[in-house]
Structures are given as C-alpha cells and as structure tokens.
Length: 425
Ligand code: FES
Ligand SMILES: [Fe+2]
Image (cartoon, rainbow, N blue to C red):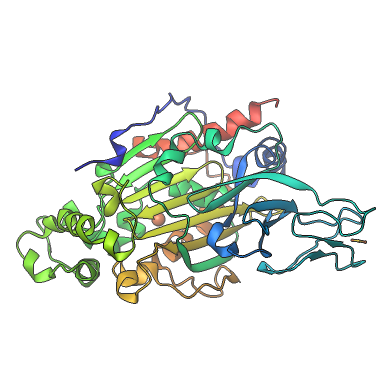
C-alpha cells in the first residue's frame, strides 16, 4: 500500500507578486513571453504512438512557429522547422499524415525524412533538439536549454512509472478560444472549481479541495493528487450511493456495485486490490505504480502550457494551451486522451467514467469555441468559463487576482513566468 505523493516536492517559497489583467491582454506582455519563454522552454509537440511508422508526422503550431515531428527510418524521432529554408513558406499544412519525403510545395525541393536535401547542393531543414518521456514528445528551440529530464525534474520519474509509451489516442480536439493561453492553465492549477464546474463528478472523484495533495517543484511544474473511484466525502450525510458512473468503474474489474451498499467508501480500495490482482494479466503494466496511482487522478501542470492528468492506470489526458500568433486574447486549446494497452474494450473505456472520457475516435477535430462541443464533458465544462474570465480580466474593474492557499499553484505558475521574463539568458 503506497502513495505516490508520499515523495513530496520542494515547494519553493512564493513571492506573492501581483497578477494583473495586463498579463492576459497586453501585446507587450505577449511579446516578452515570446522572447523569454516560448523560445527557451521545452514544448510538447506530439504523442509517440500517433507517429508510429517511418514517415508518420505531426504538425504543431505554437504562435508564429510551426514544427514537423517526424518518425525516422531507424525508429527515432526528429523535429524540424515547418518552413522552407529557401523562401520561408510552410512545408506541410495538414496536421498529420505520412510522407516518404518532405517536398516544398513552391519549387518541389525535396528532403528525406532526416531533413537532408536529396540534391547534393541543397540546404538541410532546420532541426531542433527533441526528446520523449512516457509517450510525450517534446522539443526546444533553445540550444542551451537543460536536458528534458533536467527540465521536468521530479515529473520525469513520476511519469516513467506509468509505462505509457505505447498507449493509444482515443480522442483529440483543438478548439480556437477567445482567451489568453494562461486562462485555462490557471484553472488547471486549482481544484476549487470541481464542485461548481464539474458537479457530476461528486459520485466518483473527491470534491473537497482540502483532500487534494499538491506540490510544486524548483523546475516550475505543479502536481496534484485527487482520490478517485469512490464518492466524495461531501455526500456522507446526503444522498450517498453508488451512481451509474461509479458502477461503470467497478464492473469491468469484477466488482458488483450492490456489494457496496452501506459501505460505499470502500470502493476505491476494492478497485485498487482488484486492479493489482488482474491488471498485468489483462495487458496493463502496473508493476511500478503505487496503489493510489491505480485509481486516483495525478494531475501535472507542466510549465508553461500543458496539463497532463493520469487517471488510474487506464488513461491519461492532455490539455495544451497554444498562444495565438498575434492576439493575446486568443489561443488554441488542445484536449487529447490516450488509453492504456489493455483498456481498449468499450467496457473499460466506460469504466473510466463513461461520457467523461468519451472517445470519438482517433481523428483530430478542429473547431471554434461555440460551434460544437468536444463531447468530453469535463473539458467542455472547463472551456465554458474561460471566455467570461478573459472578458473580466480585460476590464478596469479587475484590480488583480486575490488567491487563496489552494490556488498557490496559480501564483507559482505566474511567478515562474516572471522568473523567465527576468532572465537575461
Ligand atoms: S520556395 Fe521552397 S524550394 Fe523554393
Ligand atoms: Fe476543471
């Protein structure tokens, strides 16, 4: 019986610098972020199993930059600028696919998968440093950045235990939203909003923010552990029961919801025991996971723009907030989910909470906020508040954020931004 959060992070002292509205609206602030953050950090650009075969590629735009992440013939991964070195145009516009070679649409100059020109006198594609952990492929434009392992600090070991390198994509949505990229990331740095924005989770995830265990590390990232697989404590003297969603988490593991009538809070430990017993023979690799990681949500805010949530041993979801190339009051919000090998059956997908993790298939959907839903209820609920927040942050009536202790991670996020802005490197 163990807790992954027993190994606490360093939790460096906060400076409590003010968080004002200009950080979300001012073009000057956006420019500083370009000069001091985006060009310096490691950025998440792809998921390894989305580019499994030689020639498979993924395109990701971050502000004015665009990157090609390309699987090589030897199985390694390289990241290139998605830009013709001759005249500067984009080389690839489609977000993912497979090519035998990279061809400039303007003059048909051709590069092999490794970025070398096929003609002897040609120019190589501009290549960036890249590295992977747990299936997530990162790159950096900064030649003097630390290694990815150094950059991620304690996150590196935490993620390594999930053995998620071969997990497969179950949904992918990209939504153009009228808010600064930091607004959704701020919200991912606190769990205050669970009972208000995600009230339906009360029957299977702990809603009391005081029960969350959270940390932040010297490297600039945050972690939060939330118990899952049992009703919230707030239901104790109310309508305590096993709802359909919690039942759908129990049955794939051979647990009968009726057996828990009168002792509903035992479901989480029963699930942990059942998974410990059955998971390996069903294709999961849980040998290095602590018991609480078998059921609970482990939620990571990776500086600057990614939030990764491992949910039990079955799932991981990725939220990424990408800045708009010109407008600080717009961003692109990506929400991808990946399922463990062994969780491919619908029963087990449903077992992670039915509609909360609804999979629409591998194809990535692109749309503008308001046109349609992602059909991931939690993600749709999260986006439902950000446009209103942006409007308020740009108003004279906002004198700066007032944060409570649970929101220390929001404070910490902004202080890490300030550290980067102050850096002369
Ligand atoms: S513009 Fe790309 S090769 Fe000429
Ligand atoms: Fe949320």
